[in-house]
Image 1 (tube, each protein chain N blue to C red):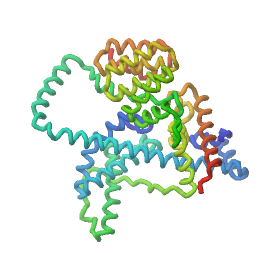
Image 2: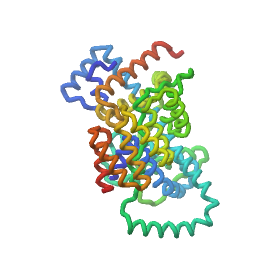
Image 3: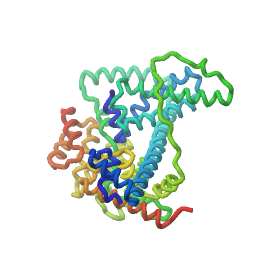
Image 4: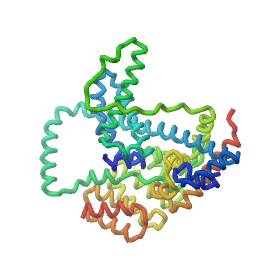
Length: 184
Length: 240
């Protein structure tokens, strides 16, 4: 497993992420061609697969897999390609069985992303009013599950205590916004 | 607020068995505690959603850059074959003369510094030049950021802005200008002065000036600054 790419996905190292994205992009588009997927859709599928790959990096799943990142990424992509074919076949009555292609990639199932609830959509509205640094702080802390020490190192804060107080300020600002301007 | 450390630990997955019992019991019996946990749960979902949306935009920008590059390249096709031959010759002589690939080193280590100076505010009302500069900078809009940093520096004389100007220049590939800017920043002693050694070293690596790069990395180590300490030692080893 290419550990440095997994770390890059977790810590937002844009240069390595871009390298990983660009390295596999054309190969994936060629792979998707076998399924007669239009190029615009293939790009969309590739990006969705890449987003899932990052989710699995963040959740720690990628540390347990035995194959290469490319195989894993293409496995997710294959799942999304089948999903796309299924969607298309609903519209055109097309038999997707004829699309079965022999290749080396095993399909990897991914969880379906739930839409935000109404309560979460309201919270999202206020979250977007926060400054970029607060958004980043709360994202690193709650979605990425980083400790205050890890955030201090990653974002260049002086200490864990600075992160703690900054995070507390951000949460207070968010609550103040919700209290001050209740969304109708 | 997350005054209760159990909540923070719960979201970092670091509760031990005893703490988990305590957490569950509080969740069942204390309505304030429960609503705080639910609030953070929702916030977690929102941050995940937002983070994925931002990441998608980032991926789309890679694609856009690729298609622009492709468009620019089409008229170059007749020149490609001869260029390729020259490139191979250069590569061969490069491999024999020097085993360090400075461009690859630069790419794997350089990432524009995060904004650690100025907490930005997103608002419809005008909250200042510096705020706009950091918004542009955080969105990787380095050309705009650079102009705004320059104007803001003229108004405020805040030397830390030179550090971000240098970073923006380096990200734009204007390495020589970045070097001058970082050197200018080193005339001041502010919270970011030691960090400038790291970015100045990377600029020198990009310019294949490894002697000066080493010097800057050594200065950073001597400063006892913890910033990029591991990477500094690694890079020094690689270029020595």
